[in-house]
Length: 332
Length: 275
Ligand SMILES: Nc1ncnc2c1ncn2[C@@H]1O[C@H](COP(=O)(O)OP(=O)(O)O)[C@@H](O)[C@H]1O
Ligand SMILES: [Mg+2]
Image (cartoon, rainbow over all chains, first blue to last red):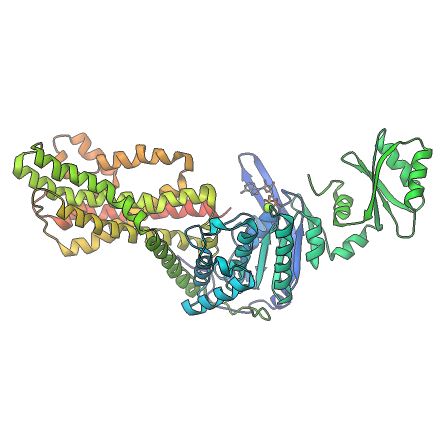
């Protein structure tokens, strides 16, 4: 049996030098008993060396499937993907050398202790015994796991297990680190700790692709964010540019009784209101910078006979962008 | 860390070879940590079989065919018990962990991401299972030689032994891979009652295959049981004067079953880890 189509090369593709990940029309359609699921469709994007790139979308958007295709575990139905210049479909065994993955679920080796999880991972990637031992020592320090070196992985807290997974994924110094929903299921404190870890890796030059359905996470951590829904890329830019793109800088959330659609139409008449819409029983009004003010909105609604129960104001977020793009909230 | 440039990529055959060796190293390290578990699962069944059939029965006068028969029985039991222990090891060392893994833990995902083709990850499971089956065979050999009450007359045919033993071990592990990739966790009890037990009782463990001549329908239908060839092969390697099937048939069947189970197992493995 052939191993990979080609044996050697380091820089097969010139475009790989600037872009660590290149996808063209990447598509995955699952054919199952429940019919066809178009998990990812026509995904074309580029991830630059050294950046933290976010895939933001709700559950079922196709984030894990995308990461799966880029890491050789999901075979695309159509399209092409290069990681580090290597075609992941044609040459998976080679591509895996430059990929580090933290999957969505805990996949630590329960037959091994904390240090051994790192050590053997390094050996899988061709490290010698001495080199692997040295690197394990460094990583255990860096990830504050040194005092747990000989603990079983079942004894770790969720946050520690997640740090160990990240340490394992970078053990072999990959070109790209994939983090699939790294903080979901973590308590707020562990989440912040992991954000620190990710930020530190980024400062050291690690290219990172991170999926999340938390818009704060994408906003805080990522330099560029791809918003995806139902397997399609809806927008791709820096968080600032995405937020600017919707033409408003303030979001007003209004809980009220009565005909909400009518209220939304009324609010759109107020000068300075960019748009207003009803999502899940809440009226959202978007205000342009220096435009309408909150008192003007409340007064207008009152005059038209609407009883407002609760009003909240905040800056527009990536959530606002998602609602603007899909008419739905990010969280279900 | 050195992320400034593209990591120097090794040729796939080189990274695959070192990854394969490292996966084996990992399995052996785990085996060493869990050596008592390994012995526990390996020793019990053959120990009881040998103890009851080759020690208790002759002592209480229930031995088949009197004293001479008892000696002959102890002798032919050695090969059979080694063979069934190897098949057992294939299920215990390869199939059950994989069923767990695919069912709940997904631990193997990290090894699937090692820089090697997925079929090689599956094949490593066969290699590691085969090593454990060989160790099991050695352990059982020692038990089977020393426990029986009547003398065991072994006559080792080295060529057969050094070829048939590894081949049998590979076949057992490949069978384990096939089962492990095709069985759901809740079906595990069925593996034992519907597969392992019938295979053992109808696997020429307690009698040579030629002994079934009075029951021609049984004699020919048990040929679908891969354990038959292991038992016959082990007796071929360890005894003299016990009737056995043609040597060529033993080799051909072992090779064929190993190939078929490896193919089924690798395909099943790919289906489980790739989508
Ligand atoms: N192996 C599979 N077989 C069938 N459908 C799948 C499979 N994996 C994912 N899907 C479907 O593909 C869609 C995208 O899933 P996924 O990539 O896991 O989304 P996300 O990670 O963004 O939550 C979902 O509708 C999901 O049900
Ligand atoms: Mg997911």
